[in-house]
Length: 189
Image (cartoon, rainbow, N blue to C red; front, side, top):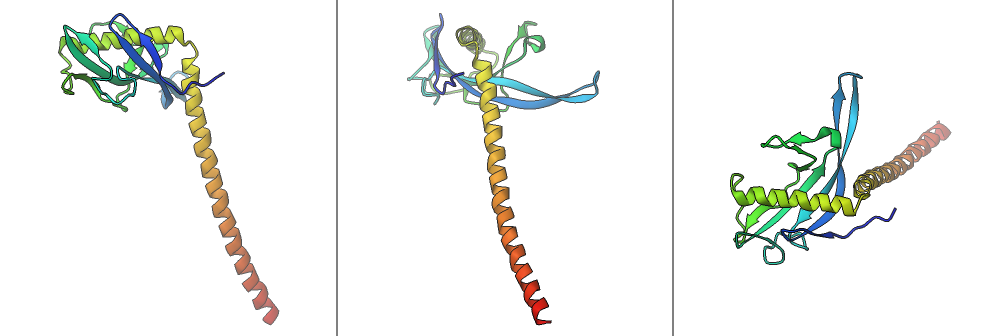
């Protein structure tokens, strides 16, 4: 499988969005039926109206009622059987990542949109539409997200192992020095 490292352009009726696959998120929950802790791996993407993912309204925006709006969020893709209800009772399979905030929804002056505004709700709907189109066009994106997590974890563990090997080598040298002192002491006794 080829791993894409660039943003994907998604054309919607509302305008153009850019989606960048991010490393999946690790978590866990306790399964009371089986009485075990289960690992959760949730694929994630970063979506933006700015192709450079810097939140610049002039480089990318969506127009609502003649005004420019920018959006930039990290979204998690929930498993189909774990969708969450939104405030209207609709099951969502995409949810914003509350631990990773990339700027949110902003007006043309760079100010955050209030949650209750119509533009905020419209942008949220446009984002989900873009993410659904992205998912249809790139069915293997979840595997890519998970692979990025696994690569990160592998590299982190490999670096830790290398650090421990360097530390072990230093301690081995120190142990040899002490052994030499023991040998000298025993030879002179």
